[in-house]
Length: 371
Image 1 (cartoon, rainbow, N blue to C red):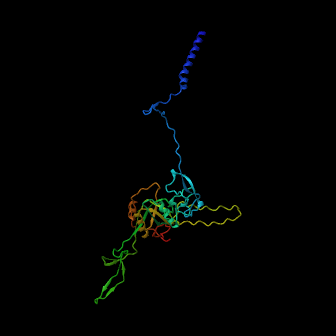
Image 2 (tube, one colour):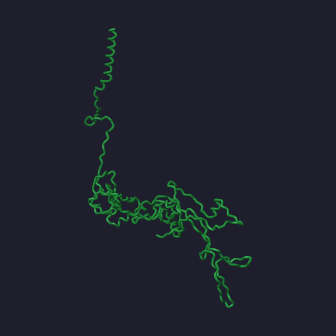
């Protein structure tokens, strides 16, 4: 029994010595010195550093002095010394046309609105008030390239019940009335005919003018005259498509209408017994005119329609639709053939009272072009 215990103790001791030799001793052995390379000239030893990942180095941020606004500078503001300051600004994000000298800003006029803590650029200030006009209107700023702005009159029926607002896209439908005219006179037919006779002595006698046209019947030559004025023939067709609505109503005098804040109503008085000063109602801006962005050729078309006083109806498009669709002009023949309307036959009976007109839901029969 004692012999077995002695053998077990010796085995444990040998195992412990093996662990010390394999694990502990290598960590206590100093690392070998870096290899040296002996140069040919002079026999100097060159130490070769071991390869490894280089530590990152911080890139210093370079600042440059820029002129900043200490307050909001509205367009047309005369910039004073206490309204601007010179402060450091990261060079990597500094605008190329930023101003770096206060003397280039003080005494100048703000060409556009400049906000607080905003760097002032060279194109933001001018020397003369007349130079401010070069900024232009908001319409020219938002108008897509290749389009021009044209205004047309509208009313409640032609503007989708005043549902057209800024930014919409619309199609334009026009309606024309056609009548027959004399090609030489360019007057509505029929012509006024005056019969005359020549006496034996050569005297010409003019009879009373008759409106109509000469014709031959079984009764002999006659003058066929109309019972009423010629009825015009109506045709409607889609014209300009996908026009952008730039503005509804009149523009402000300065041309600035984008981002104009809505006036805040005055708060009620703290004392309930105190009568509040009545606030006059804000006048509703006129909505009888719409400015559209169209191509140059479409602008000429719109001008012709306005000059000809042709009514134009706006149709609002989906905001996700910019396609073009070919449409067919609509006349009385189109309505009857497309929807299967047959011409009513004549009957030996009718109803009383006689139906001489149908109900018309019209808010206004005429579009006024007056201001």
